[in-house]
Length: 249
View 1 (cartoon, rainbow, N blue to C red):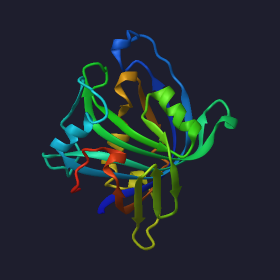
View 2: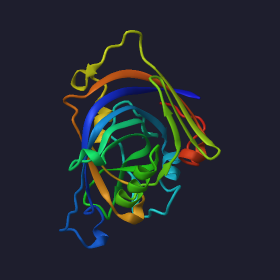
View 3: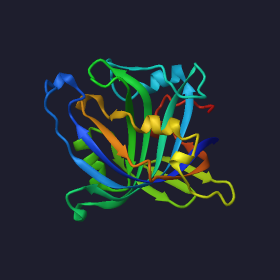
View 4: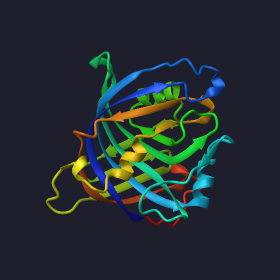
């Protein structure tokens, strides 16, 4: 179990999905969009892994010959480390904008490798959302079909200071803490938020064979955050078999 820096965030969100990321689909002029909205309450944890491990992690789950690691531009990361991101949270009233009857609350976990590129993409900087777990069977199926994400339905629990995922024999556990009497603050008043915002604003993709990219559009102007500390413990097979045993932030 390791200790990492994290932020607890509460914000509104909508996002657009487009198939124009993969030019091999020969639909560079076609654009399919679907608007999803909701409110997001989550811990975001960025940590650094050595670049060799990051390379193996990138290609661990499928053959992505067109995708490679980029040089990152995040302050505080040494040259021999690459950032990865954990999104650990819950979606509230999330679903299609057209009808509230189609929206729901559900737990959602994402593991991501940002700062990658592909010669098949028109976007220069991409974020690879490699693994997802969701508490809703319907949403996990939708994530797979609509967005090409590697999403699994799992048993999940979230409290004010902990998060747990169970899938078959694998587990992920996280415990979080904040400074006593730490108030909520606006994102724009939190000077260390920029690395998170940089990654979360990237165009993202899931399983490469689907050739689907999407973008999140977060309402950071009204978002509230609390600086936190995170303790994470998990089976590597649940996240990525090449996740380094010893990781430094």
